[in-house]
Image (cartoon, rainbow over all chains, first blue to last red):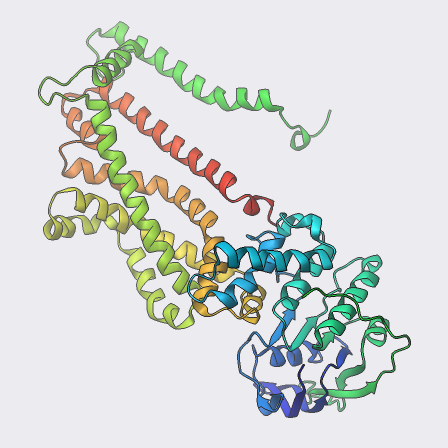
Length: 250
Length: 271
């Protein structure tokens, strides 16, 4: 549950302008899909929302509050790769977030509280179809399973905003239909606002409630870095078919 | 006939091939020893294998007349105690510093130049300073080994910590982790197998500094014994001791390798 307001945001690296004058008002529970050529600032935009990069000019607000300039528990992220912890089992990867929240100094729970978070994590694991993989390490999971786990890992912490950076880009095309179903059901059940970068136009139309395309508006052949990209299309999308709100335990 | 690079030995053949150079060296020694002894029955440089066994028996199974101890075992125990204490202390120092240096930019700016400089000091050049400051006892020997290997372990682990994918550290922050929690639950657990690798690489230098310290100031220990009997050209003691040190070092290396495989299965399956 969060509104996002991007006010006149510019991002420059030295003389190179990456993004210019972004202005966006994103409503609560919007599913924003972002497409655009590579190198046009989609990922930079996502990283600014994440808080690992700061706008050169302008500001971003979440629920009216200025965005905290570092990653935090209100914004979940799923990268294309490497967002799982290789030393923890599938279950351990889910339990971690819950333990961090409840145990400030050890980051670990014992006894009854531990059993409670394990119960909860097992439910979530089963809801994303990974019940059988509970004791396996990430390296022993297929790419699709890893991404399911990574999504579940973010969602179990109940972020207000979920950021997805080409989460299905490295997966077999056959797997993506399942992943779409999963992400939509989680989106419905948890009332998150989602931003998803995709290189797949069809996917972006299918999943999103709003589609943004990033591109350069102006181009100077003498110095290609002089102008940055901006939002060239901002399309509200009508859902072609309503999906039944799926079950997400808890 | 397949190309050489595509011919892989089976398990038995691999063992045989691995043992071959050892056997060749042993045979070479026996031949050379016999040639010398044939020329001069009193030769001390290459004593026969039977002399090794006699020495081993007396050092391992008979009390030393002067000290009442079984010299091989008391020497081994003295050396291993020093070596293991030093490895333990170095690991603790290395891990702590490396976590902070690898992950916290301010601490990296503060400490990385110092660690890099200390790593460049030849440890043996520090030995006189150590003897002057902490005396000739155990502390000086353990400190020498620590000075020799802790900076390398620190630098190695700090590099490994900095190599962790940025995505992991960002992800755990979005799960609400503080810097402390991130170090404790994400970075430290992934450093254990790397610490073992680092220790395995440091074992050689650790033994080097141990023997050096024992050779210069000690009253027991494997290195002390070797340098003591050197005065009498007692190759029948020196060579078995060197072999014994090799056996100890190789076993430690093997033990660490097995420990890594057993304790951190995720690191084996990993990328």
